Image 1: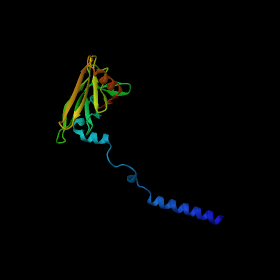
Image 2: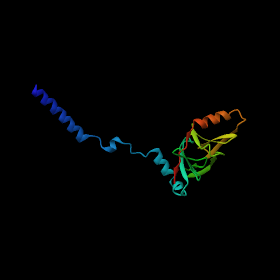
Image 3: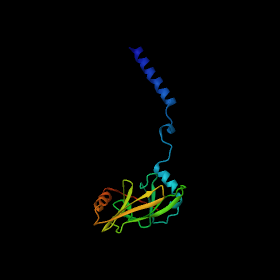
Image 4: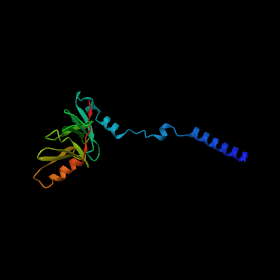
Length: 170
């Protein structure tokens, strides 16, 4: 019995040594590629580095091929989030250069920008808008509906279900 126990313990010890000597290094177990956030920071670094103190930026999934950069000069801090009712939208031109594409804006600060299903939503007392980037033509496409139009409730519902854009203060 002692001999079997010694053999088992020796086998366990040998296996432990093999795994210790050939174990995974940190680079084998972690993804060395930059996160999407880090990639976005690098892509828009020139714009972000040039922002004035007190402004804010965020990335939004409103384009099929990349995240857009939203910049606001009027951030609103509410309920531990930094939100905005208006933002300048940056994307990329056909050559991959950063380009200002336009602005999105709610007519009231009580309706900060939300994002859902590839659109940024804004609104007001009598209308709702959604915006996305047409990557092929490098332009911001905005649709606005009045409260009297049939699809107003669809836009409002999407706005309500959307995720508030949380900006980073500069």
